[in-house]
Amino acid sequence: MVSERMKGLGTARSVIRELFEYGKLRAAEIGAENVFDFSIGNPSVPAPAAVNETAIRLLREQPNLIHAYTSAQGAADARERFADSLNRRFDARCTPDRLYLTVGAAASLCCVFNGLTCPGDEFIVFAPYFPEYKVFIEGAGAKMVLIPPEIEGFQIDFDAFEKALSPNTKGVLVNSPNNPSGVVYSRTTLERLAAILTEKSKEFGHPIYLISDEPYREIVYAGFEVPWAPHIYRDTIVCYSFSKSLSLPGERIGYVFVPKEAAEGDDVYAAVAGAGRSLGYVNAPSLFQQVTSLCCDMTADLKIYEENAKLFVSALREMGYHVVEPGGAFYLFPRSLEPDDMAFSERAKKLDLLIVPGAGFGAPGHVRISYCVQTDTIRRALPKFQALADSYK
Image 1 (cartoon, helix red, strand yellow):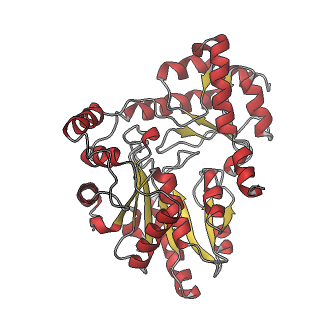
Image 2 (tube, helix red, strand yellow; image 1 turned 90 degrees about the vertical axis):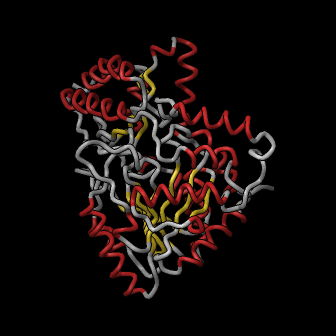
């Protein structure tokens, strides 16, 4: 006998991964240049040269030490560098003892959900959302409460949000810049959210935590701002990853930041650490604790994503697609040209155009396009998008 729930997770269909794997098989058949794969969020720009140089230097200088265990919360010198960076950039009032280094943002979120959850707890998530959130929340024994999307701009539907809040609400998860829409929550949006959470925390007699999932924080375009959430709402917990800013998704390195000002902050930090222990994470990868902490003020050359976004948005709108302008990340989330987004994705697939149905992100009637690809790939794909649109006329 095995856990039926875990067996279900292990065999569940992931449309994103399924399309990605299909794309590799199709590329072997007809050539990679003839498959237009916009399915997965793998950064298309290399890590800064300094990242590789730092890794090589550390491997040469510390061949015996660099692969050793670190403290469970992360090496002290690495956490100190991360804290210094956050303080320089955001006036974060961060100290090393408030950072818990993790195996990427996914592990950060799992540590937070497992650390916070008590029986009966609920976490509110806004659609469109990254599908793994539901797995992380339910895996912690909590319930995910989904707020339907506000499809004109993918900001927050506050009427639906306020109705969903209850004494069981332990936290609210935000992801800005957003996967899958690319939308950035405005300062006004976050301030209204903070005011509601402050009021409801008092009404319910316990803190409601704002969990800010920020792997795309540095990928933000001209005219948009990504505010430092803890300055807007005191009871914020930040989950971060270097996967996108430094183009290191496979190295799995990130952190949880629990501000000192957060309600019951000492207990929250201890619970996050306890969750990491319970989940068997031991410590984040030791080499990349050092590498990313020494390179944490750098980014990969991210400007190409904004150029890709401008090209894609303009072209798709001319073809008749409805596209909300992205403020960051590297995704578009246009409306499908028929109500059944799965059927629309399948029709695109026949043109060797791989785009992900939106239903899995909590927003049926849309598709996700990941444009972290070479700009030439987008240009060559545009006739395919035109042919797809023409097929509905």
